[in-house]
Length: 308
Length: 269
Image 1 (cartoon, rainbow over the protein chains, first blue to last red):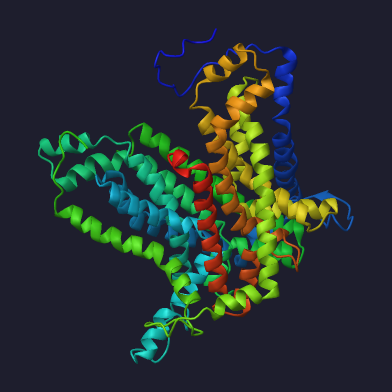
Image 2 (cartoon, chains in turn yellow, orange):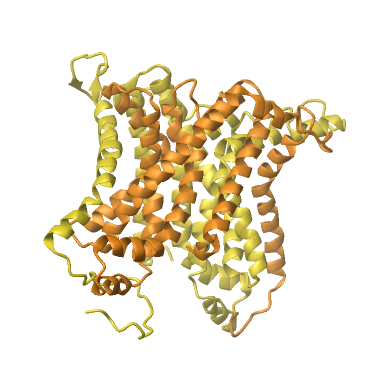
């Protein structure tokens, strides 16, 4: 039953079921270990989300004891009002711009992180990418406010030197929001792409070069297409994180710029309009899910070679 | 490393220059916050006006900041303990037992990581209000446990998959009962995974913003929520001092655990 201890067999990734002799009763008690997690998951994750979706389809305030009527009116109101459509478009636009900027700035770093041969350089890059993730989001936004605000580092210094008479509009607009969004979410892009590139055999690029390709051609024709799944996964992750971000657009936008998460918060915590707020939240969820569907669609096209 | 180490062309140098700029972009805001905390002036300019710890004094003597700081520490500590126990127990079953629906359950348990945290917080807030609970510390704690338990499940699963079941079998064959096997064999072996997850959970809970946003009671805000509210109306460097203290705390937690448990053992996770 027990394997010989000194066969020197390497641990394998997937293994068959443990052949530990276990009676029915002990198997039952072991499954009990799963119970706290299961209860927590069902009662405080599945149930609240189901309730949220249900509320979005109801008329009247369930707390006030109004009669429950199922209706699509909240969704009709969202899609029939140009204000909500503009907020939706603002949110998606911020997500698209921030994702594109993260890809352009992050890909080269991900490539070098995966391909560098110096452990020291690799460590410096990893620390610089990971350390902002250990700092709270409010702290990081405060950092950007100190740099970009009208009284921030850049404007205050330039005005003190007499270069500017009025502060540059670096914040309280889309530019400031995008800068901070990219800063907060680019590590996810870099780490995802870097993981995929380090899995691509470098000798493929060498082979292309030996066959007469330039370095740039070898990268463009070999590594770039092979890293496409990483690019897609990174973009998906960054997009879904940016569209659901609340604190970045509200602080960097100076409470002027309206996005879907800000609107959801106002409706629910501000004016307790649960049903309509829940419908907006479901819309936000749908934006994220549609990107995931798109991701798998594109991935299957890549798999079929359509995009290469 | 490789047999045929290719020489790096000029392209590599351009790449390095570009990436250096990106790395500077990444670390600058954090660096600025620390600089601002020690700057004597109200606004940071270059060159800085002078060294001062007045903002730290203001932070550590502010009743509101200290109250929020304590709420955050207490919440993070409770969250770590509960998540570690619940997550480790679940991971043990999910990796070691075979039962119907196991793969689905493993994926489902990690799903709170995929949902935007803002939506989790919002859904829980509505749920608590409908249940008549409103905003309570317990509700906030449960929300933190829900979003952090997946981290423990993930790190413990990684460790469990990498050690030989035969060690447990050997203990059983030598007459140890199930509890003894767990305490003397399994637990010491998975400790690195539990600890790595616990550190992560502490930092995620301590810095948590979107989940807490809907659920904090007014007057009992966590530090990130209090800082957010403070930033709405004032912009003085007390925030920088609070931030620097938080950064230092994260560093201390990581270093302390490294000293006690040897973080390097599981740095590869």
